[in-house]
Image (cartoon, rainbow, N blue to C red; front, side):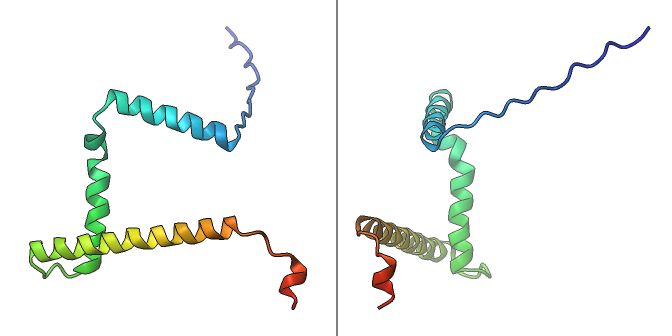
Length: 106
């Protein structure tokens, strides 16, 4: 008995714009949040994120736990302050009118 001939594989390429992808991502995030406990499903990521700051402030692991956590908290605050400054700088640049090439040649 002969095997049936294979149908050709049809591939469809679907593209979405950024706004559509953002909407789909928000829907997926909200659906996940409705089915699962958010803090529980992100606990491992949060722990790993904070552990990185602890490694930064005490790479050898020689400080007492309380001091290491205190320094890691300060390092985390500094990190987010740095991000806030960069974000404000970017917003300020976007709000300024673009510089024409003739103005930069002077």
